[in-house]
Structures are given as C-alpha cells and as structure tokens.
Length: 134
Image 1 (tube, rainbow, N blue to C red):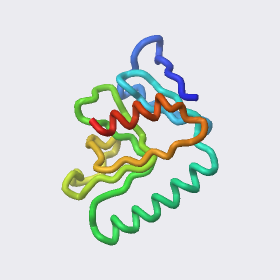
Image 2 (cartoon, rainbow, N blue to C red; image 1 turned 60 degrees about the horizontal axis):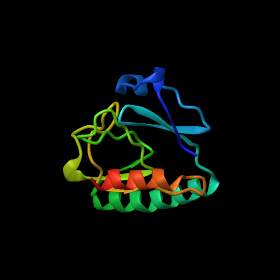
Image 3 (cartoon, rainbow, N blue to C red; image 1 turned 90 degrees about the horizontal axis):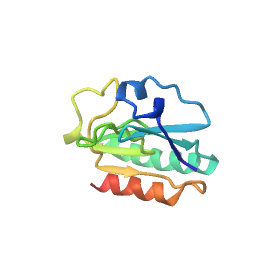
C-alpha cells in the first residue's frame, strides 16, 4: 500500500527529494511537495517490465524515434514540486533535450507505461493515469 509522508511535517523541496536515499524495499515519488512511498515491485512486475522495455527500446533505437526511460525521475512542466517515476517512459526525438539531464527529465513523456502490481492501490493508479493524461 502506498502511503504519503511529509518530510519534516510539511512539504519537501525538489532538492530535498533529490538528496534522499532510497531503500530497496520502497520507491519514492514527490507529488505536489509530498513524499509518496510505494512498496518495491514484486517478481512478476520485473519480468513484465523487462519484456516491455526490451521490445520498446529495440524498436525505438532501431528506428531512431527518441529515447526510452525506465523508472527515471520526470518533472512535468506545470506541476511544481512533483517528480514522477513511471515504470517506462518514451520521449520522441522532437521533444528530447540536446543532452540527457544530470537530474530529472523536464518533459512530458509521449508514452508512459505503468505496470500494475497486485499490491497497488487502485486510487493511486487512477491518480497517476489522470496526471499522465493532462
């Protein structure tokens, strides 16, 4: 179950989020300044992720379509204080910056894939879908 936790009782800055160290048993996203903790995905998730990632990456690379990202921090323009980490994201060549960023990508991906695990709360999945469609 994902839970929200507030850093220091309030909101967290992007710099504070960037300096967090993740543990192997959870994934962290920053949503409107609030830290959201999700349990680390299970075995089936990893198998599905790898299969999808391999197929999509091969196609995108072979055709020179852009870049595929996996579990990488993305800041959507217009969503201050938010860093999302989609399982897989695709950015077309037209939307890519000249160089990959050292920190978070600041772009709306052209395709986002979230692999739903049995322990994912549907309300959180629905919120992610709605944010990705905005």
